[in-house]
Length: 166
Image (cartoon, rainbow, N blue to C red):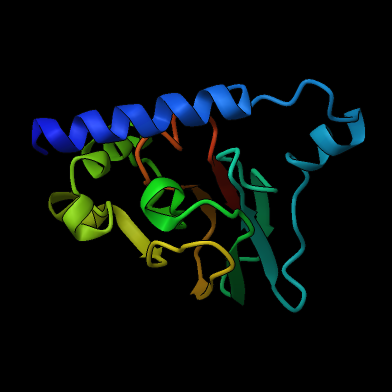
């Protein structure tokens, strides 16, 4: 990443943090805060949303081992993709998620998917702009699968979670 790209990214993030209060919303009702950690049932599919505050609506998902599940990511934000894109990357159990996110931030030309670490990915969506969505179909073995958005700084402010498969 060149210095011009880093400067533009830093400026965009600084403006975003000022506008959103670093993604914190201390006035949210307790029920809304606890919903972010509630497991989602597989049923007809899971809808995960990403917003301009760099948050997913869910941080914990539950699936049954060996059963096909659909997970749809919807970017419900309004900011342009270049400033606030979102994706969903499901990683293999045991992956160093922080190292993965750091490596991803250095690969804008590859939609923030680190080429050297693709063997740690179960599946992922493309980077989504406002009002876009993408659906993944997964069949997972038992385990804990971390998931995250790889757009720079999104993981660090909390755009991550875990899929528990039993």
